[in-house]
Length: 112
Image (cartoon, rainbow, N blue to C red):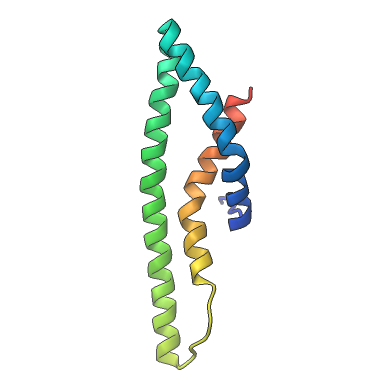
């Protein structure tokens, strides 16, 4: 079973680790431009495909979270139990989770 992190830890990963990943990849792209190394071009390609996959996964996760929150709100309305919820935090967490997961993995991989 996947370990879900909190919204705060996902935001922290994006805040602190994303710049490190960007710097490492920028350096790799500069080296690829100078040397023409195939392995550096692989990293650039991986960067693009990971972004596209994270965006798609984020949209699906956000839609699922929105549907869950909508069903929960409809059930509460039907039962007459309307109250404040934390749905917005769950939706934001679902949208950020794919990006934060990839940033953490890339930070570990690129720091070696």
